[in-house]
Image: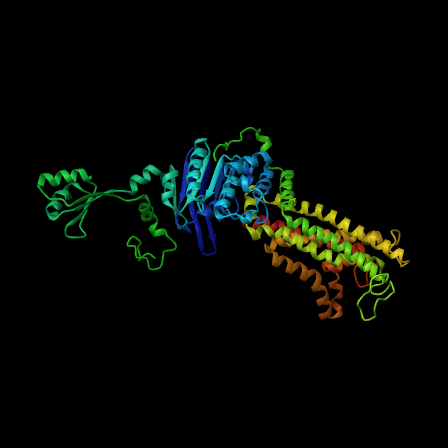
Length: 312
Length: 281
């Protein structure tokens, strides 16, 4: 269980994390979602005690992590896979860190096998590819058999096979009753693994809800109707729909009425339809929409209409 | 790939605790799992012993020196101190030990490993004490071996040539030998502390080597003589009072020098403790 209360971190004038409050419960995978620079890593570093909060607190299983009696057994973490001494072998890296809570060779070998690094365990960690480094980082996180697992962008650099594997792993860890907290800047990744979402933007929590609720709230059903007699449909649809917009003469975009009803209505009225398409916003779009105002680094002259130039 | 279970719920809770002895073991594994450690320490030993042997041979005239005077047969050329002759390698040992200490402190900041380390030991200070303990025990062995092997080997060479030797029973010899051991170990620890405070290998090395080797010479050359009373409190000048058999009058007494050097050591380690405790990793 992670409990984050009014957590704030300021660097000079810049507020990286701004009064963040949320809980991460055991038994489910909780996604920590936000654009780059939103404060995900800073929040995680404060939970670990690597960065001291300007104010507020973060509790791991009810107390500050600094006071943990068996740190690696309590909270396993992957922050940045490159946080290793380059000259040390993967095996010795795990042995050295595990030694702090009395983890021996057998456990180290098990973890090397679990992440698929047994064959390269004696190679120096500095020679690893990003994906192999990521696997070593995940092995480090799981080394202490921790009750809380916290991973920052774990799929970074993994091949499709590795990504599949980590999705399954995260779900298994949660099913075993652990608290699993995973950050990502990709909604598409969260969609497949997380049951609960904490969305952060510009250091503030924008949403804290179950994935189901997020999907429901984020994707209003819209239907695109193309008809040479669009005008005739407009009036009756207005009575049923939340909104009806028309970008072109023959095109209607209807929100809040299913395509089947629109089709039936058109048949009753004898209106010819050329196209009837349900458009549900992808979660990626929903996430973009949600965080649009809080994205810190917009691309300069992006052609996408979805990015609100006025804000940037 | 997932044939192995993630679970390991076999050990009793008390067996899972963080203990200082475990952090110590972690740092011990870290030190010896880098090939550079053994190489650097081996080089320290080799340099101290070989330079002592070569300098003893050249003092007895067995080896031609290239100075303008040719191969002087006079064993008292140069410093004229037989102990300085047999411990000629100590100056180079000091350099390598400094590098080793700074690396032990700054390496993890350079690589990012420090974040993995502090995530495993969030109380932070046990890491410092463990690093100090591992470094001290390692350097103690290397310094004792280097200093005493160089002493006995060098003395054997000198006495076989009937040159003056630094006898065990001579006044100040044992003190100077132990003083050299203490200086080597102490400098390593100061290096470690500087590495942890400055978080940079270059910065730590620059500060240590500049402060230890160049500052005293530079300062005494540039500053008026009236400053000498202050300069003797510099770490290297303080150390010289207990590493040489007969230190110049202008320096502190051996006892005072030891106290002053120990104070430098304490200040450096205390500074590292504050830096580790207070600063974000």
